[in-house]
Image 1: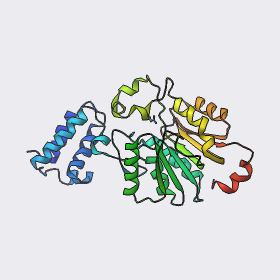
Image 2: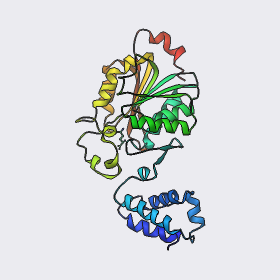
Image 3: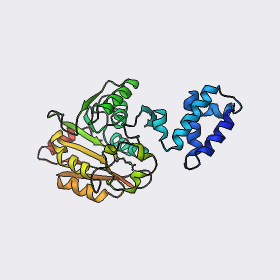
Image 4: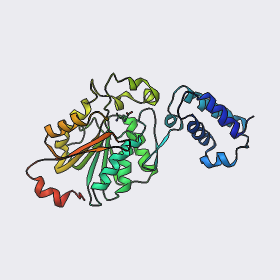
Length: 292
Ligand code: GLN
């Protein structure tokens, strides 16, 4: 029988290898007790029932094996929205909030048709649908299990302006066109040593890596995005910190103009985008896309 303070101290020791041991120990105990973190510091002397203590030890053992906290709790917050995740979905990253921030800063409340390619847990689509109720957001993924999780997340947040499609990139879009396409595709190089370190070891390879230089998916999306965009429509993709130049070239090569390349909060190039260039766009764009 141990109290909260003692259990946290034991867990920190068990998680010694992890740089986030203190936080992980607390988050997992909150998960078992279904409480806020403040509860742990308010009631450090509280003794747990034996079953709960055993449950906690089991979660700490999983974490000690390297399983990401988000997969143990089945939850991760993105854009302040709690989302269900599983080992089928990528764990939403804080750097992807740059994409949300960029899009919301640049596009106002004018109704738009938006597509999120490879939605995973639905993080991007859900954050955009939540922040812009007048937008119609379509989210697709190659994994039916991801679609089910993303749908469930949309329901949890009571969003009605979202639809989900089981599709390998543009495959099942049936000729539909959008004003804005966004994506956080896989972009890590296949043999990058980071893939065998830390949390990413437990994430789906399909959502992380894409070809020898990591750019296969981004090249495919840049090459085909125009056929799913309305004239003057915008395309934004997240990418690796060292991929700014090739992604910029790829966008230009496929006829995108007004290129934007932005840094994440860590100061790393993380997002690139551009506008579909064609003869009609100068007429349609200014009145039609809600760009502010
Ligand atoms: N940014 C993630 C990482 O470096 C990768 C996400 C992705 O490939 N889309 O772990």
